Amino acid sequence: NRILGDAEGVATAQFDLAQIDLELGDSGGATPRLSESLSIFEDLGQAQEIGAVGEVYGRVLAHGGATAKAVAVLTRAIKAYRTLKSHDDAERVERIVAEIL
Image (cartoon, rainbow, N blue to C red):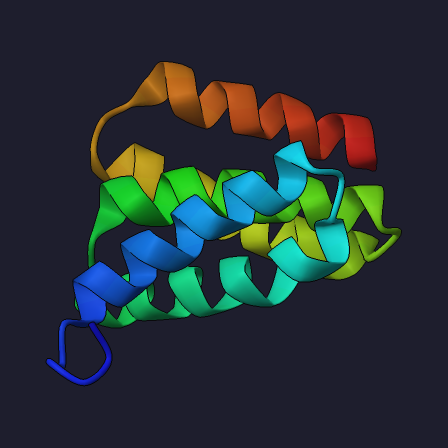
């Protein structure tokens, strides 16, 4: 996908691989994949994916003790969900932020 210049494909693949890493208990492997995926989706302006990846990435960061970064990422996910008028999703992520703080 990188060779073909398929940024969306790279972001999707990285997100999928990160989820596999997480299922295997490898949050260290998942973190850079989630970061790259979120960055690409933000560059592409894909709000649904920003919300989904941001929510997972924020949880991983929070679990690893990176509270400030987790809140920043989760806030971006909330904004993306609000843009889509996915209020239930936004409220779920807001509850995650409240638990972290």
